Length: 343
Figure 1 (cartoon, rainbow, N blue to C red):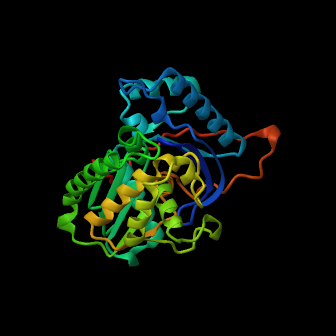
Figure 2 (figure 1 turned 45 degrees about the vertical axis):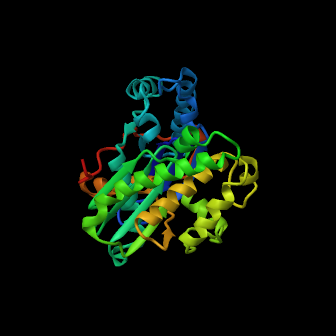
Figure 3 (figure 1 turned 135 degrees about the vertical axis):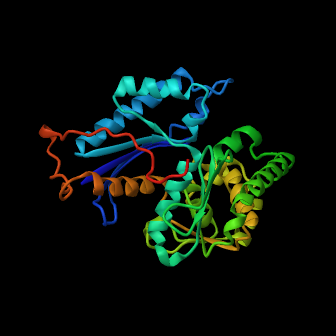
């Protein structure tokens, strides 16, 4: 069957369509995304502006129509920190549903960490042993560790690369004093969060998910995206420390010219590097693996697990090739509470 996942993030809004069934690897079919950057549409009170709301409605409509055209049979629609922490977040969600018919499910930070961890666990399997996953988003930073498919500890802190850049790094390039102040704030925040993981001991495998980790790994010598998902990619702390120092001297325009760095993410790459460096220090990691699966894949896998028990008999096969004159009917289903997820 064909599933869609609509992800309303702090940097981008992204619809991913996959062909999948329980027990099989989700195969990407198509995607549609836009660099909306909701965090740039916050007013002084921390509320999403009318302009930001209209842009969000327009994209959700685009995503709904895109999913219908490509015969998606199920759609998981969710949002993370950008709407979760906006002053008017609940009213914005109501407005989007009224205008588009799509109900966005708000994930808590712990749910976000848990579902991203699930994706990494499924990618590396039981043979990985105790797994620690780190994920740097635009508005928040998630950490989760465990031995099973659901983590023993899952923590979210407001250390998203976009948020930190907006609140702490005003210059281009930022002043050394601003960078040092931000570095200390990040270290203190991550250190306090890492204390929750002490009872569970060191992990056998540490992974990094999200575009920020992939970009940092690429800039320190990892394989490019063109090498495919199965290429092994690693980020070493000693290389990251040198990279962070280099990034601190570059303007956003200069960073955007680096291999694998987009103009959208270039301004916040330094903040992301500082978060990654602090996390690797706090967890005493010399290196970590870059996992190609993250939150969207975790939600897809959790949805497939749910369908396995909800659907009598075999699940429907994938849709027939799309015929423009007979678009399929889309089942709009909000991303539900992850089964067994931490409260």
